[in-house]
Structure formats: structure tokens, C-alpha cells
Image 1 (cartoon, rainbow, N blue to C red):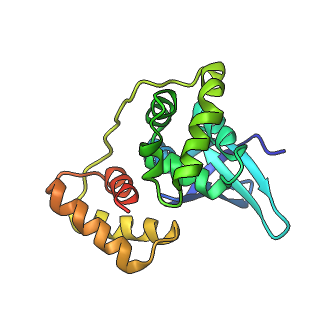
Image 2: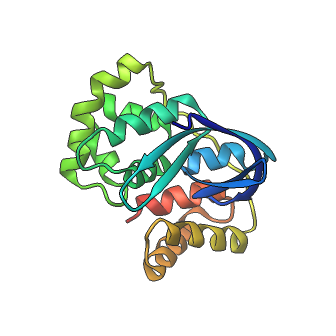
Length: 199
């Protein structure tokens, strides 16, 4: 299988990238956390997971080993597909999710779009021992992204939420609510994360 991709970053979006390797463009879905780590890079290496279904072969990319490990643990759970796994990792970083699982905090996980109470409880129950064995970090660390003018990040955040399956009306409502609460200083990553959690 494809374990990693290394090449030129051609397209960058909060939900996916296109990597050029010897003239072939690979479309790779990414989390918001990976996006915030690679947004200033031109040459890139992403750890990957190839998900194969009857109708599609989809690549998922991760900047860090821990995020990939956590993604693979998430999709091993019944009812958590790769898109839901990526949504969870876009809403919570590795440390936040690890801490929520260890502290039986399924309510935090349940705030993610598309994750119901039963799925959140299953994630906590099934992964508690596994994340300790895998040595996944669990201290909540918040990394702030770059600050842009509101209108620019508003547009980018809207595109990202639409790509993640939100309707335009819901996405715009969430973004506007977060911007009113936060004032002017908010990064694109923080805005999308907060919008994902406010559904």
C-alpha cells in the first residue's frame, strides 16, 4: 500500500491537498490539524492511508505519525468511516481527542458533526486502552494559526464546511456566530474548528 507521499504541494485547501510526484497529481484528503502544519510548505511529505471501496480509492494524509495512528484506530470502530474519522480529527487535535477518550468525556466527541451519543461512547470504550498502548499524547495543547482579515477567512472557512457536507445556510450561520463571539482575532483553523463544534 501507499505508506507516504513526498513531492510538490500544488493545491492547498483546509480539507485536501494535491501533491505532484513526477508529473502525477495525487488528491489527498487531510484534517484541519494537518492543514495548519503544512500551509506554508511547498515541498511536502505526508503519511498516507489508502481507503478502498467498490466505487472509490481515497487517499488520506497526515503530517504526524500520531494523527495517522489515531485515524486508523477511529476507523477500526464500527460506525466510524474514514470521513467521520477525518471530521473528528479536524474538530479535535490528537491531544484533545486522546484526553477526551482517557477521561471518558464522550460529550466532547459527540459535539463533532455526524457523531451521535452511541458512537461517541463506543469510541471512548474501545480506544481507551489502545491509545495508552500506542503512546498517543494526551496533554491538550492549542496551536494558534495565522490571523487573516475576517472576510478572507470567512470565505475559506465556508468552502471548507461545504466540502465537509454542511449546507450553505448552516455553514454561514455557524461562521457568523463564531465571528461575533470571537471578535476580529481568529485564525482560519480556529474558525473552522469552532464552526464544526457549534452544530
